[in-house]
Amino acid sequence: MLEEMTYLAEHLSSLRQEIADLQKMNTHYSNKSEHSPLEQSALETRTARLLQIKKELGNMRERPSDPKIWWERLHKSRIA
Image (cartoon, rainbow, N blue to C red; front, top):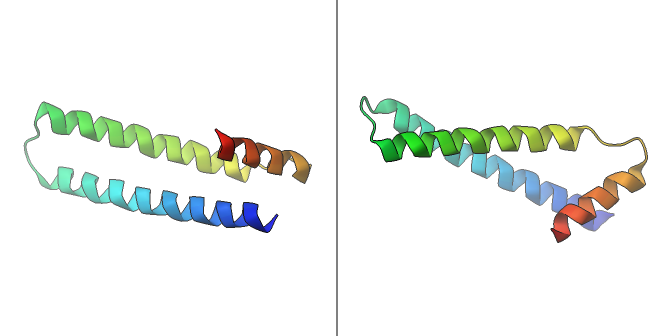
């Protein structure tokens, strides 16, 4: 169980870092007045990734009432 908690902590830390990186890139994008098609595409990709992260975090909050199901789901996601 401790191993799973360590995994969760590391995963959350990784997501926090990814969010910070995406926000930094979005700030850089918004500071420019003109954007190339590549920059616009990159913005769309970052936006989609932020939505994926939001959904993933939401799914993590919705733990099943039976802890066994929670840990089995976590274990399966680590294997995939």
